[in-house]
Image (cartoon, rainbow, N blue to C red; front, top):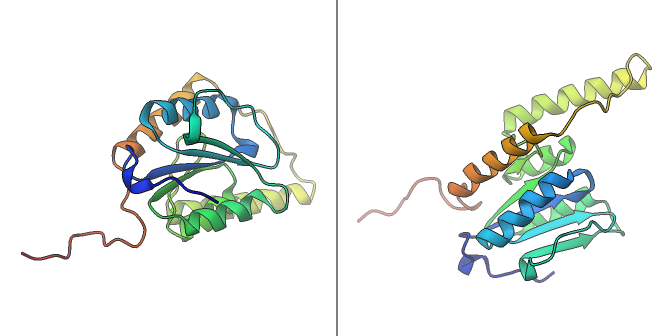
Length: 178
């Protein structure tokens, strides 16, 4: 797959990958605006076509993944990517795999996952799935996604873009001496 030259990008090498299958429409719209305004490449990956706005040019792409799972595709592509990819997903197992690879991952409500927090969330998710499998609880889809959640995501994205982490493979502190 052809990649833009991240070193010359106005965003300092940041590229955003999105698990589009579960991404709320308002988050897609926020990401599209950020892409246009800041010149940041955004790649939406899903198992179906998603409507994207116009005007994104080469920076905004919809990748329809039909031959493999979107999770596997995102894991492979972001692990191979240079620069600083940010992945936006609400899929906890996918987020856990990416965080273990050192990829920054944020959910659609603006939570940036850390190694410890993602392990705890995965454990809670698996426990709830087991409870549901035994018929002791039903899955609730009552969670809302309103203006508060949109603002939380937009604010967290702005904070991330203002000071993204160093690219993977770079030392945390300068080791050069004068």
